[in-house]
Length: 587
Ligand code: B12
Ligand code: SF4
Image (tube, rainbow, N blue to C red; front, top):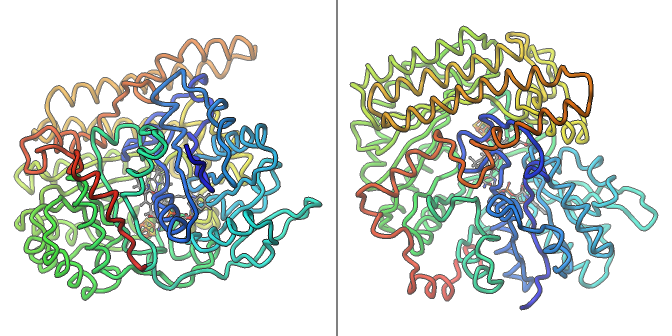
């Protein structure tokens, strides 16, 4: 089997999660990943495609999925057997602070002379501390690393100096740290491509299906993404991808867009291979209504029939939904309202009103939207326990207003496990009424090992004690679940399972709170370990099911839908087509 030039490894959030007893709670309730965040960054695909274009072979290995799928999977044995020119590890999301560095240590143990490259948002934020770990050689900063990484791989291959590579933090032979400025910040992202066929080629080339999976249950409920931009025009106060964070920490002054025709192309290309929903990342109206119009026109011309998920940052007007209906036979909408409470929503950086949102929901429902997902979050500025519980009443009000329309789906989760570093709140905690409990990368690494999610948090707000925060969040989730069952949005059986899980976790949290008061360290550890099978039940057990985020996806793939004639178009002809027609936008 040929060896790749670069092997990209994705670590679990906590490296030894298979041994540790940690109650992760609802940390990953609204995403497809399990609570060890086994999903790798979309950027792995753009990196793989870009480097491949320049003749460098890239292999992606999702170690986290392999570990989740098999208790017996031996990480060290696999890493020992690999011999690329360089290893890349993502520390994009801060929740990977523990796992990513532990994996880097293993790489260095077996391959002391193979360079280890880190990248991603959290790597960029903590780059100096990160490169000071002996197991890390290079950190590539910024939100676009494809080109600097290409140059770095060439320098590694040709043993050349890296002193002129943009965005690179590196150590020289004497261990001195150098910080090359962030000068590679593309103004548009047309030259990158989410080449999905790379994943399938890799499966065949390395005979490793599991290692390529974006997340554990991807084969059961596949979905894909299409990117409209890098950076953001908004400043949500809790967000580490905001305009403020991008400018101050990733060197980006201005958002970079992908041409809307290319976004439509990306979706059409995915459709050649898969009958799965594609989520368009970023509000189509962020660059103005003309951008959205161009996207819809191109989507119609391409004949996109897969379901397309759209999100909004500000509620769209009626016209938008008419155009969506006309262009896309299957579309869904999603929005993070954060709270129903105007003061809390404003504190999170969003200024639109409930009336504006409700008008948009009405127009979407009239214009054939297939799902309208609404997300709420807890742990925000001005948010009291009372306000959290009031959100439940607002959910009921919405179902009443829209006659119990089952297309309206509501979800709530806490801001977990961390408040994003680089966000407005993280950088100005006093101003927003927060206390930041972890400042360094190492503090975050240690926090991740705490026995329950309430203790992992890197922040506290002055509006709720940690207990008020955790319990009001659970109570609101329980309340919303009941309302969804009442209006038939979820089945009685699903509601019962979810309810059982939430009460079970509330109870466990109380038990853990008592155990951590035990002074005898050995007895404390033993008592925590006794809970291991219980804490894993709804999180990292191989058959765990979170019951919140994926119920609609499960329905999509089990219901009698158009695209449910078999999820994959590539069996077997599609595989060949995908293998033979690489999608290289920007070539
Ligand atoms: C889309 C998105 C998602 C998607 C996932 C898409 C995916 N698989 O990548 C979903 C909705 C599932 C998601 C989930 C989460 N997200 Co998110 N997400 C975003 C969003 C909106 C856009 C990111 C994006 O599309 N990037 C574009 C792609 C193409 O590039 P990329 O993946 O970033 O990769 C590039 C660079 O980062 C870098 N890079 C990345 N990895 C590596 C590795 C190496 C070796 C190198 C060299 C370079 C490199 O190079 C890549 C190519 O240029 C950002 C906000 C924003 N404005 O950016 C938040 C954001 C990244 N997410 C964030 C968070 C916190 C999360 C969650 C932890 C939330 C949660 N508790 O559920 C989870 C974690 C998911 C998991 N691993 O299981 C934070 C991260 C802050 C931080 N520093 O930790 C952000 C900044 C804002 C936010 N709060 O939402 N997210
Ligand atoms: S949360 Fe707000 S600031 Fe962050 S990416 Fe989304 S819209 Fe932009």
